[in-house]
Structure formats: structure tokens, C-alpha cells
Image (cartoon, rainbow, N blue to C red; front, side):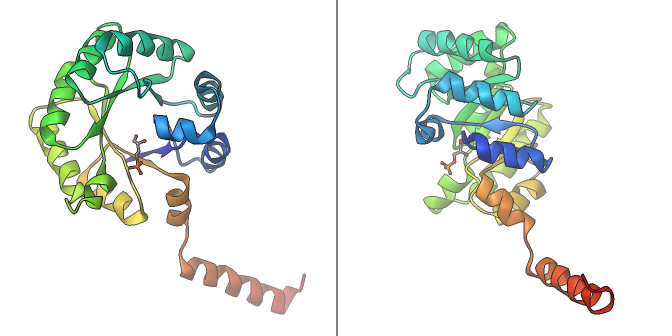
Length: 217
Ligand code: E4P
């Protein structure tokens, strides 16, 4: 399983990239709004940091296929690594079909069922993003959705990749890896949580103490 970072904050992206752990970025309208900056400017900066797929979503106010296609073409023109993120609706699927026929990569987002994932794949989506945490939030096991989509895609030889999204903690990440998700898109905070272990900290302290006792500074 590969890692994308789920943020539009360029500092977080730079720090995760420096650790060598991410190979792509996902953004969404809420994450872009949080930065309070121009969409194209932020996306352009992100693309200059990470050499991998960068998902930029069509405007939350654009709901018709034609609008999403026009915006999708604009987003794709920002950088060759751009992936157009499209919400899972009938109009969204029409847009995915057209963008796919033009060789533009898409990431179908807000996927909460296997039926939605299968339709998105058949429309030509490069990626589907099932939202794990938001299902957990309403007491439906999000991880089951990831494994079920994985199983269906394997049975039918579907090449659309699964990006496990709405990841909220390190346990989510490991569960996604066990379920066979191709990618997990993970917030910076969770990536940092994954680096830590109390025994690692204790071990570093002990090595330091033992070394200093014999060799000094
Ligand atoms: C996916 O691409 C979304 O940006 C994201 O994972 C949503 O996560 P949230 O449910 O924590 O907002």
C-alpha cells in the first residue's frame, strides 16, 4: 500500500515529502478553503513539491457534467500529474467518462458503497475514494467497504485503484493495508502518529545515556 497525504497545506506536504513516505497528494474543497488561498496557486505549489498524482477537486458549487468537464480540463492543464477529483453522482460519472476519453485521470470521491465504486470504475475512473472514517462516524464499519470493493475489483480484474480516504488514525491505516487498499490518503497528523512508539523513545534515551556514561559528550 502506498501513501498519499490528505491536505492542501504546503508545509505539511513538504515535511512528509522530505521523509520520503508519500508519493501523491489529495485535496478537497474543505481542505483548500482551510488554506484560504487561490486554488491554482496552491495546487501549482503542491505539484512543484511532490512528483506524483495530485488530486484537485472540481468546485463544490459545480454539479452539472458540462461544468465538471470544463473545470476538469482546467485542473488537468495545471500540471501533468493532476488528477481531477469528481463527486460520485450521475453527472459526475458523465464527466468521468468524457475526461477518461481525453486521457485525463480522475478520482471519484465521496464513495460510500460498493455499487458506487463499481459504477465509477466502469465509467473510467483512475481512482475511487471510499471514505472510511465518515462511515465509522455513523456506526457503519468503513473497513468492510474497503475490503468489499477490493474483492469485487479483484474478481473482475478492474484496474481502477482504491484510495482509502477519510483515514483518522494509525489503526485505520493498518486495517486498510490488511484489506489490500492500493493507497491510503492520510492526514499529516496521522502520518506523524504512525512514526512514534514509546519503546523507540525509551531506546533512544537509553542508547544516549549508555554512550554518554562511557564516552561523554
Ligand atoms: C479524500 O480524498 C478526502 O479528502 C478526505 O479523506 C476526507 O476526510 P475526512 O472525512 O476526514 O474529511
